[in-house]
Image (cartoon, rainbow, N blue to C red; front, side):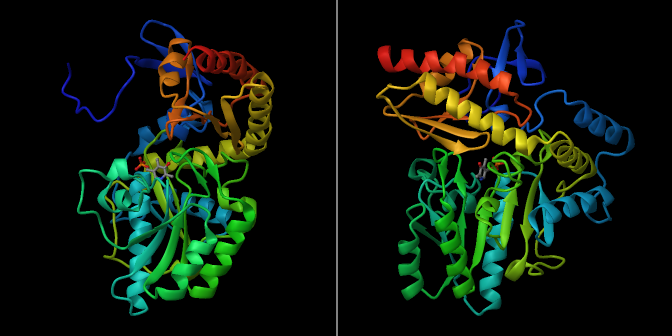
Length: 391
Ligand SMILES: *Cc1c(COP(=O)(O)O)cnc(C)c1O
């Protein structure tokens, strides 16, 4: 036994290297990666542009400090702002940190309006992270159990329930923001329809609330647009990014516009590592590759191929409840808990995850091809059919 703390039920597999969308373990066995480190490895493995950007930056400097200008951070902030049509970017190192920044922004926005105990409306089945504030915002009682007292200031509603939010608006004058994922990842790949998104934007405008979109999992081109909210043509006041932003180098970002712009000044927030030159070089290479290799169009086409292929291969299977998602964020919901499929798939050389107990989740790299999609379907469909028939 090593001294690593026992916070993950890990599979007994260790990978030594990867190439494209394939990972190789210590015995030389290869695995088709339909998870990409949980939506992190946007460009797959050993992408030449990413490898070069990281190596070149390592030759120059890895880290300086936010006490000085960081030109690569400025460039990456420009790329994010341009893609989003938003204004300012705060850099950190992970998704929960980006959400912490968003929560602090919302509270400051409230205090500036004279609301002493500001509240943020959050969703059932949301996942925003494991730090105390983001855990409190997360809509999963199991994840919260044992860590009370939770951070106050969150009001929970069922996902996509605009009427529940309207009812709160009527009697509660301490609300300052609504925070949500436009596609819930850990919650089971649940997609917010466009009508809900537009109604929510209108309600936030009407009330002067911040709309905070957690794009940590669905952002960075995965759904076929840079950000999940762009499918409805609405724009949030605050957006958080992390996972896929630098294709495997740790990074997070909290992006603002509208009412949220200019709320923080020097001393209000900070991060030692946040937006260091290495992470930003990887982030810039990720943006360049997504644009030049047309990876968002690819995500749309390959995602559709996977969903169609799975639907055809699983046609008539009563145990398959739904096949859903957008682009390369895909959930296959079964009628029973199927956590065992993760290990079984790995044994068969396929990496995926099961979330929300019953949803097989696929988050392949944006470099997945239609040929990879066919390989995936031919590996996964028989596994699901066998599981439904024999357990
Ligand atoms: C993974 C995830 C987070 C947390 O990110 P960490 O980097 O693990 O802190 C937050 N929100 C969403 C939507 C996520 O998928």
